Length: 227
Ligand SMILES: [Zn+2]
Image (cartoon, rainbow, N blue to C red; front, side, top):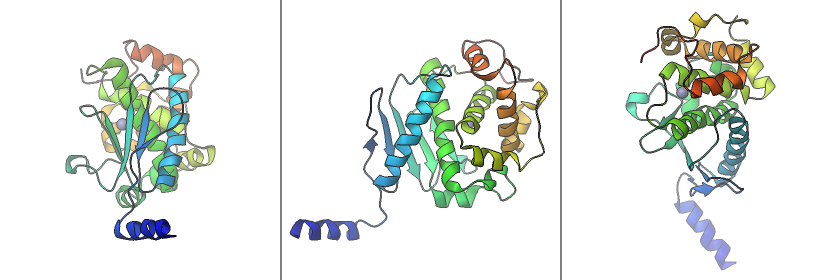
């Protein structure tokens, strides 16, 4: 009884609930999640584990620890982002649900899916960046190539209803001409770039075969990329 009372007092004094970093159970290199509550961290562990399996089968095995943190805001210079992979500290930061509601423009296709599903999908997106960095280090290829792979896998790992809701926001159909996968669209309309990437990824002869070639250094379909 007294222990329960102590716990309740501690909980009341703690303010906004922030869980301790949770080491996701299971085999393989460590995945650590820090979220608003332990239940949410447990959920995100299962999301991250599912993403890890899919990405490993797509030439992106996890070979070092992954650290995922749900945050209320991102650094000011990345205020337009929904998530971030810091290649210097190797930490993934993803906005909490309030942050996503605040930052996603109503005109974006990403506004068509519930923030919970969007947040789960961002785990996959940022894990792609982390795993490419783990595999290739600092020389991890042009940004447009990294974002192509990240968005393709983000949509690939979405539930069908979430993906269909997102795709329905834009009148875009396959095949996607390679010219569509360019940095201007990536910067100006990332939701369009995301849909282009997924359709392109799904086209015959592309998929994980293409991703494997890109990560081996083959030239990609991307026009006018920065070196
Ligand atoms: Zn990205």
